[in-house]
Image (cartoon, rainbow, N blue to C red; front, top):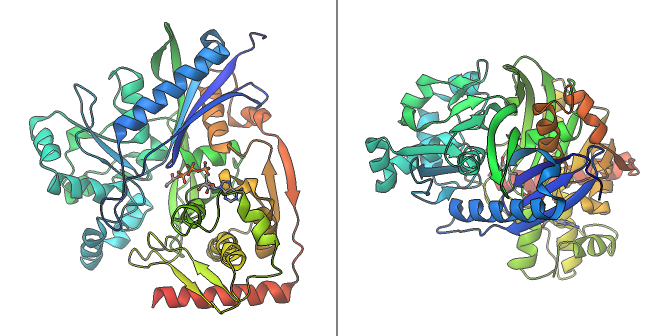
Length: 490
Ligand SMILES: Nc1ncnc2c1ncn2[C@@H]1O[C@H](COP(=O)(O)OP(=O)(O)O)[C@@H](O)[C@H]1O
Ligand SMILES: O=P(O)(O)OC[C@H](O)CO
């Protein structure tokens, strides 16, 4: 083994935590992962145990460090499921309550109340977000109101609140830092998008204890140090997973677009150095902040992507593993008239209907599991096409799309995306682009790369999918999907 430097990424996703070691050409040298338990205490509620997330992250980190040799690790980058919020004791680091996951809808009533008060236009102008339970702010308000342990700690001044990045940075540094990076802070409903500072008005309106919030910092630089196998290793990069994926995909200049298909699916279009404004209910968000200077993006959020495949596997039991979906989709010439709108957690962009629920339409006596599986995969490209229509209305018309995330291992999905978007789709060699982006940020943070553009030396292309579907079939399929969505929105 040579002693060339490595960059480690901690990628704490919704369903698993992973640690990936990259060399400076972007090849994966070692990886370790562990699943995260999903808790569904009530319909519409989703919780994680932050202590489990920390324990598993620490174990994966140690295992990879042992394997590659801790001395080779130049820096660590962290990336995470966003919006999910943790409440912990700032002395012990122990969670005081379950973490409320981004998919959780428990604050839907509060969001509706705030909308009725006419707050949404102001909220959108200030934070770039909408009044949907997806974002952390109303989850925090709910926790203070409903969990006595959290309210007590807030009164006693011992409460720390943060998204997963903030919690993991706290634990990794032995409680030395309570920070969050600007991309994660941008998802809380509490940050002023233009200044990247906490917005006192939103904090007050939602009754968030100001002292419990972390400091907002850059995405690269000296974020802290972790004691790993007897050595101190710098943590030099941090970003929410979708922003990290956009960096890992080289979406560095306005108009470049990526889509990541994990548990959910998220389309980000780089928008330059001013917060963009969407007339189509897309989100305006921070793409990264370096040296105090923010770059921005437009985002479309799809709440259910890979989790629909997991549902086919674990609840309907019509597949044994996710990879099986590819063969099944190919085994039928079309969807047989079946459409599947996987609105399990409401519909995200551009509809933003927290109350929407899933729908399977067009079933006949001839429908087979292959049709249902195919309709489930088709929902990915259809939901993406809805977002591209919204982007086009906002003046963003990309020539190609870069895709990543667990689902794009599926060639059929990638080809269907190219067909439905009528656009070239590029898949990189490393589909763990989220982790790659975090490693790139860490490389910039310790000066191994001058900037994010130089860090793109770590990106390598794998395969290009070109559109092959005729316009008539595409239009018919779009019309069939839109009809199904209309029924969901009734
Ligand atoms: N070959 C495949 N075809 C379709 N879906 C897949 C395939 N492989 C994995 N998936 C789905 O991808 C998801 C995992 O992607 P990943 O990026 O690891 O998610 P996350 O980061 O949200 O935890 C799972 O929901 C799984 O069902
Ligand atoms: O776990 P993922 O990769 O689907 O990402 C979750 C998102 O960050 C939620 O906003």
